[in-house]
Length: 296
Image (cartoon, rainbow, N blue to C red; front, side, top):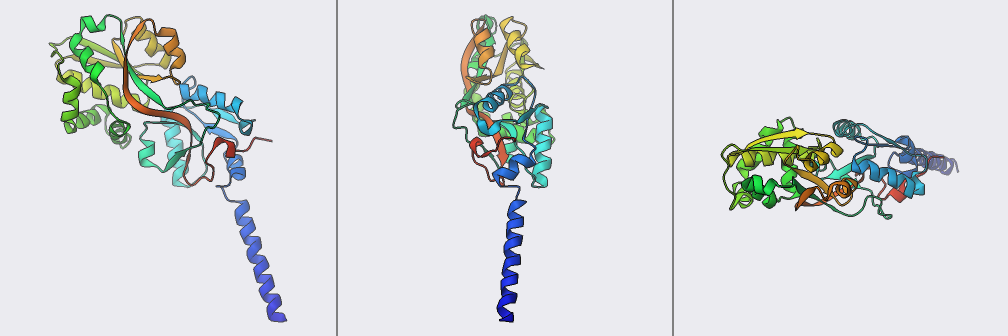
């Protein structure tokens, strides 16, 4: 009888410990929402993914009471890395292509209400008249097309400490056949100036630096200038800059496209399969925005 009582007490203690462990499990959706303090770590205020996240907070009852905390893309990536190092809970505004998906084991939360829209393309835009003024460079920009994996190679090298210009040069030198497709039939330059505008996101830093290397190798004198999203579009529309390879459509830059579409020339996608949404580490036990819990 004494033996059975001892076993029963041990079993009870084990169940208590299991229950306590479950109660403190940062991967459960209840405690996850609480442990991140109902806060989404964002990037620059006004970015498309931030506007989409604000829309998601309105669309989902599960996000009632949640806060979207703006920062910068660099600060967000640093915060993410620190959280993953300690396997702590975190939820961020994310997008692909981005080097963090190559470096970390991440997942998008499903978005059944479609607040973040469908997959996007990244398009090339030029100022009106650019094709007539610098036809060779326009041909290269028109034929520029690569994959999320291509872009990811450049972004990852930059994230590991390489200068963007150096990472771009390394990629171009290692993908001669692909670059030859972009430059096929393009008239070589003789020092004509070409100005590229871009928003200082990791993805656009990669693509714009690669395009600078390609155009410079073809004989053009290419300058690149980082700008705010709205100013980038405005600079192409008013002719202060010649082109950009950084237009996320139809969602992220949708409002800016509608504002300036009659003042720019859309050369079409240079990358397909881009995406934005809420992102968490894979160790978080939540697969959908609907798995989150509102702040009470």
